[in-house]
Image (cartoon, rainbow over all chains, first blue to last red; front, side, top):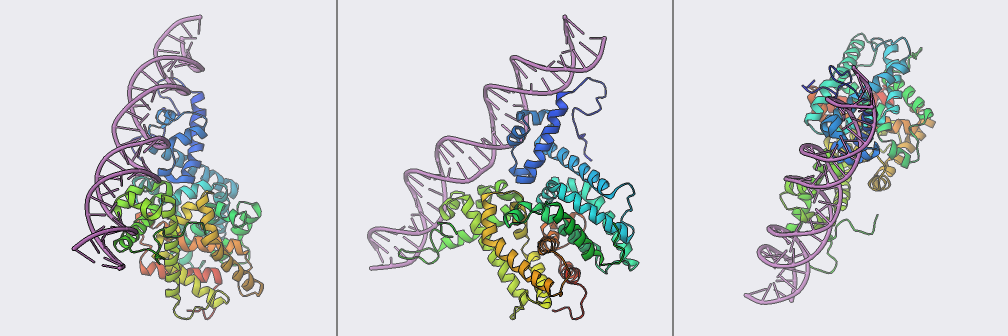
Length: 223
Length: 223
DNA sequence: GCCATTCTCTATCAGGTGATCTAATTTGTC
DNA sequence: GACAAATTAGATCACCTGATAGAGAATGGC
């Protein structure tokens, strides 16, 4: 949480006046930025390409987001927001939490489907997590750590209770996230290999298989 | 396989003369290129940074490799060669192949350890596989497809024989590779979270856990 | 319907990009 | 030891990068 707010011309204008078409260009810039960053990485993405894809001009980025870096942060925040929405939606009204075997299973299932629907997220994550940088530190503290600790804590508890396999929680976390996301991160590769990993049938089979592999083929497999 | 050979001043000089210090700079450039490409992606990596890291000057890249693109290809070839060497080494003299449950298990184990030792490989793969491009097509046809087909074919066979779980082979491939590589691709992130995924103890626990999860906790777990 | 404010657009900046040309240097071979 | 080929080094190319400045257009609030 830095000193800079997410949006300089902030969404709730404290004292001053207005914005109308501005919101549209902001949104367009965020969407375009996500695609460009996911496809080419932070350094490989060009602000001109982002602006053009958003149907506007390059200096708009600095006007609305101050810098390329701040645009990136806003885009990442936006993306994690969408992830949470998607997970909630897939879980339905009653979120069982990660605290029970059935709840863990339901969350794996929901996460796989959310990850499939937001391939840009794990693409960006995997590009940034590759080398230490200020951006990585920002994203870890703001987004990764809370999720990491939620999952590992619950797994540690389930493991202690003998509900799940005797596997270290960090090993589990990276195996699970890796297994859940690569098929979508690498979707263009899979397509060249002749497989459509973004098809509903694949996603469903994938989610089910992961639950089985990570939690074992228990009777009453939750869902 | 393009019209351009891997090395313009080829290793076996057909008719002409010599090279001596040239080999050293070539190797230094390849090593530096791997790090830069893995850290910043193809487009984000700069030839000047690569040359400087290699202790030489930027035009050397064009002299020895014709272009940034060809340098990248040479570096990737070099890296896959090292992967094969590492896997062979971890497997020991008698490679059991992927054809049996024990062989599959041994290969998973060896692959995890090799992936941990060559984090640049999966970093580059995951960065390239993110968007369709000429480079992705090149790498898929040259390196990915043979490996993909080897693993999926063997799994399909084992599955038909009831030796392994009833899971689609493409689902299995991406789950396995993802689960095996993310901890090392994202090692800098894990370190910020307080975990050293490159430590031998982690690698060993990880490899063992994967075998259990993907092949089940069978008696006589091979190895 | 005005008008200050917000937003957009064009032009431009200094710096970095990959690539090429040319001259200087090193080195294997005779 | 000389000489031609291979390698290195320096200078420079046209182009792209993110950012800024200032003129112009649009718009909410009165």
